[in-house]
Image (tube, rainbow, N blue to C red; front, side, top):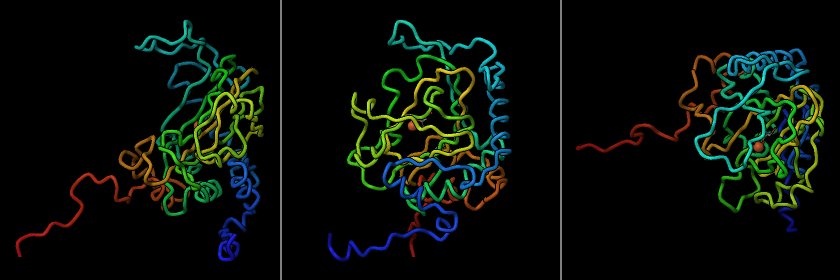
Length: 299
Ligand SMILES: O=C(O)CCC(=O)C(=O)O
Ligand SMILES: [Fe+2]
């Protein structure tokens, strides 16, 4: 290594140092994923209870079905028939769905999206000034043999981006565990260090390299957009609930159109409105919706 490279200081922010984030920054660098416990991210277990309660209420609102944390859905559920013919003779019964646009649902979700520790770790991968929200979703799951099938649904969140991928993340994710994550209970699956391959998952090798991310309720799993991940089927009774607050580089399209369609008054109703506005991209130049450059006129 050249002298100038070897002498480059590792820059860790004052905030990261104060909050003891070095081990998590190092693990993100090495493995492309880190599990951060409540005493480090600072979200109380009361808040985790509140988030869970809001999601169970929203699940009922969307489906009409009652959900119980220990039992799962209390009535049988099916998805509306797809218009295209199914690839498999029999679709497995549904055992999960997404609750979307959480930021508009309740202030507790907006507070979570600007959690300073989560945002610091995400910015360490994407870039401090260029990090934006992509989407705020909840994965709601219950017992079911199939899950994502034999592939475990392994993917990199930045799969859609053209190759080659560089070192910095084009997207990065947080999965807040609102229930315990165990392998049998349908934990996230991931391939340690796969973000350094800089490519999409290679099958079938990826499946045998995958590990369960086991983590107690209240933890947040933070991962790089190039990290190969999926999930194990939920084989145990009861529910598995997470919140995926997903972030992007400002030049990457967002999943949810927060920049143009998010209620500004709601954005101001959270623990850090300035940060929320910045991550929402409200003041970004792109995409513009009208002529935004000066035009000369006859002098
Ligand atoms: O928990 C899951 O089922 C998958 C989560 C995931 O892929 C994500 O949040 O990007
Ligand atoms: Fe993903």
